[in-house]
Amino acid sequence: MSAMPPTMIVASSAVLCLAIVYRLWREVVRDLAVLLWKASDDLQNLCNEVMKKHGGTYVLKGPKFCNFDFVTTCDHRNARHIFSTNFRNYERGQDFNYMFEVLGDGIFNVDGELWKYQRQLLQSLIGSNNEEFERHMMETLREKTETALFPVLDDAASSSRLQGTEVVDVQDVVKRFMFDAICLLVLGFDPEEMSSSVSWAVKACDEITEAVAFRHIVPVWMLRLQNWFQVGTEKRMRRSWRAMDRFLYRCVKTRKQELALANNDKICKGKDHQPRPKFDLLTQCLMVEEEREGEAVVEKQSDKFLRDTALTLILAGKETISSGLVWLLWLVATHPHVERAILDEIEQFVAVNGKAAFWSKGELTTNKMVYLHAAICETLRLYPPVPFQHRCAMGEDLLPSGHRVRKGARMIFSICSMARMPQIWSEDCAEFKPERWINRGTGTILPVPSHRFMTFMTGPRTCLGRAMSFLQLKSLASAILWNYKLEVVEGHPVKPALSVVTSMKHGLKMRVSKRR
Ligand code: HEM
Image (cartoon, rainbow, N blue to C red; front, side, top):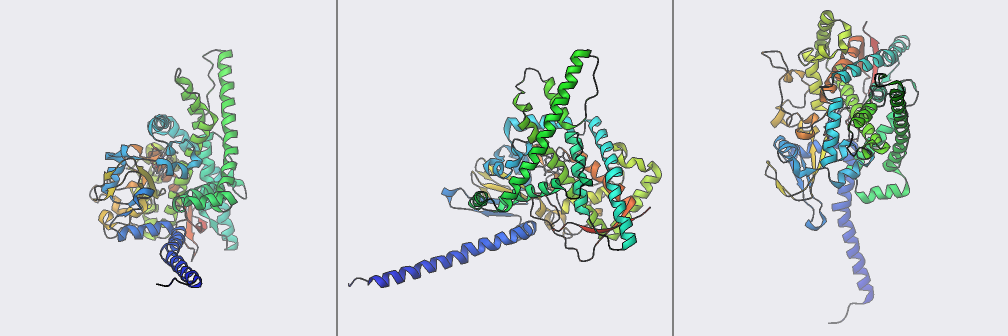
């Protein structure tokens, strides 16, 4: 057999290479590009479609040696298994720690003893047993609402009346307001973002939460490139991270100095002289630690640890409540019969209890303003502020849905897809129907197990701020809706942004008018 001439070898190798590149483009690169584009356009919608198509659980198995298994699920049986029954087998894992790197050793980002320690500490500070903190929180919210939020809405309403054109981005206003309020609660300091023309803090939080979401969908080598060339989401996150650190470390330093001064006073003027300490969570953390004599508290009082805890609480508190409130205001404005029912209820509530009761824990229990409570549950079901949960399987497992999980598999639990599953919420699951939460016979809120209504998670890591969230959402929503009518600007597009919290991609443009 005669040998192939060299030109033929080169030509056929070139054709082979081209064929491989074409195939790779068609099957991998193009699919990856389409997936990335779809995911960055509307990740939640993409996930909902995949979940529906695959009956609630989708397993992507990579080759065994490269440890690239993905299990995405929204099955409530799996929820109970992963987050409660077999809780020990599912930890954050290295991937999660990397994605949420900005939170350092804050409670969201740790497992084991450090998690237990922080859970206990935070439970004592923000749990519903701490009535003093709850009173302080409601008083802070009332004051900020009346002195900062209402004046902004009043201005918008009067410009709208005079010029007829004034439009407000309600999402931006609510985010600024919540940042100020949560900083007062966590740091004892009001950054007054409501009165600045451009809010660095809202931008920083948005950039951080967007970059963390991006880290969920973009391969690590691409992120490394972004970091290397200092472009894209990674660049923006690093910039915001630095700004946030400067702000937080300043506050930590001040609170520590104030506490040291107060302690000095106590020593000089005797034990009975106890000036009332500030009620922010940072000071409370420092005081709890002081009482634990003999324990190795030094590292837990370090500026870094306090910074991590403060940032975690600020993001946990600001992002979730802003998200819940903004989606609620949008849903109420676009469902007039719900708006009417809520207003009737608030009117009766005010007639019996007076306006001040908007800020009273005793008056805002689940059994008062039941319809508003149901509307909040329904909003948090359809648009859960934390749309996904991420875990790593420490060992092999078999899920109740019948899917096998390999050791090291990444588990994504899609809370947002759960609301769109007719198996759980019946055929009308995509509709906004507060009535589904109310027992027709008794008129009270129906109890729904936490592994079906996963918005606040289920199992040992369930949200510590659940009770305070309902209090805050109920008081803010009733105070705003009682005083103002909000109408969505015609044609304004509404869809979730690419973020680890469900905020609106294009903000929420509304026209404001005063009701009274
Ligand atoms: C509508 C409001 C809220 C929603 C939907 C919500 C949702 C959640 C979810 C899904 C988790 C589980 C996160 C995970 O395991 O990765 C969580 C945990 C947590 N939440 Fe919330 N949250 C809300 C408000 C708050 C507030 C206001 C605070 C307090 C400032 C708070 C504090 C926490 C803490 C400390 C944890 C960590 C619990 C742990 O890991 O043991 N949350 N929350």
